[in-house]
Length: 137
Image 1 (cartoon, rainbow, N blue to C red):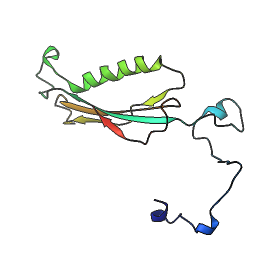
Image 2 (tube, rainbow, N blue to C red; image 1 turned 120 degrees about the vertical axis):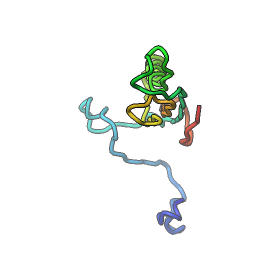
Image 3 (spheres, rainbow, N blue to C red; image 1 turned 90 degrees about the horizontal axis):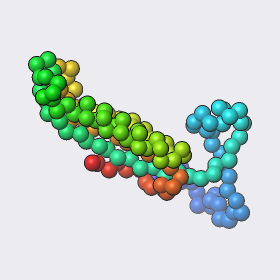
């Protein structure tokens, strides 16, 4: 990967021995600024998992189908997301997560959605170092 990007460098310039390692970052989140701090120390590396969740329903006409007869995938996905938030919010205050992408089909304002796909990404230091991948459900 480094070779393809042009950043591999010459073998003679590579570090052979070290007694320590320092990696500087600009904080991407609001924590240091919110606490009035100018510098922070990383206490751990978080692992990340990503799930892609698919909810199926049944398309029908939005204007003529009574609410009690609908199998609306978006309403079901909304209920699932609300339940996920209730469950995840009480697990651990260090857990962070987001539902960052949602696709609603057929994506027509006059048609009841028959399929919703959304992602759930979670990060926590106890997850470990996972490579990023989305698992479909």
